[in-house]
Image 1 (spheres, rainbow, N blue to C red):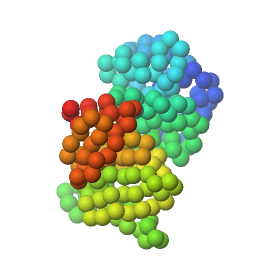
Image 2 (cartoon, rainbow, N blue to C red; image 1 turned 135 degrees about the vertical axis):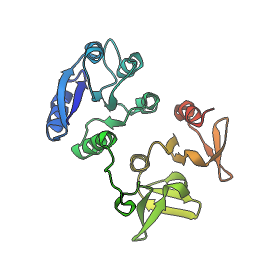
Image 3 (spheres, one colour; image 1 turned 90 degrees about the vertical axis):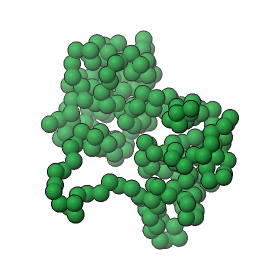
Image 4 (cartoon, rainbow, N blue to C red; image 1 turned 180 degrees about the vertical axis):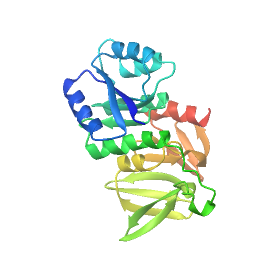
Length: 235
């Protein structure tokens, strides 16, 4: 079954790029595209759509205002030239936030998240053949690949061209970027709270003022991230 896609963007060039990308993926098909978010709202009221590719800054109705107006939105991938709306967009449970110009490999990674959500788990009676849920990732430190379990990860801190990964078992310093770490870590378990910090939500001991405490360490919370953090912590 192909996922029905709607592309909403006021830039014609963006439609060309997205149409080209979507046509490369056998599991996707474009059922409609428009430069008007108002027209998109009407279309969504009357037609089934599985995946919405949505720009944010558009006349009449912004992408986020469109999502706010929809009662049952489909899966959403934001396609924007502006990064400052990323935090607000996750209030609408979007699948991903792609920054223009969008490279195909980044587009493909985003689409795979949606395809995975629509794919039923393989049925099997043999527990030994059941694929385990991904619960870890590997980093390369001093030329050695080291396993990091999500359950042990406390927080990540940027340090120049490196990031420090703090776990219950120690810390690691690797050559990487916060942007890549944010894309690697599962969003349901981790959140960026500052331009320099990503935390494991399950490890928060306290949230107070503009700080959170994890493992007796106080970490700053940026103003742009504070509201979403409090909502996800249930405060």
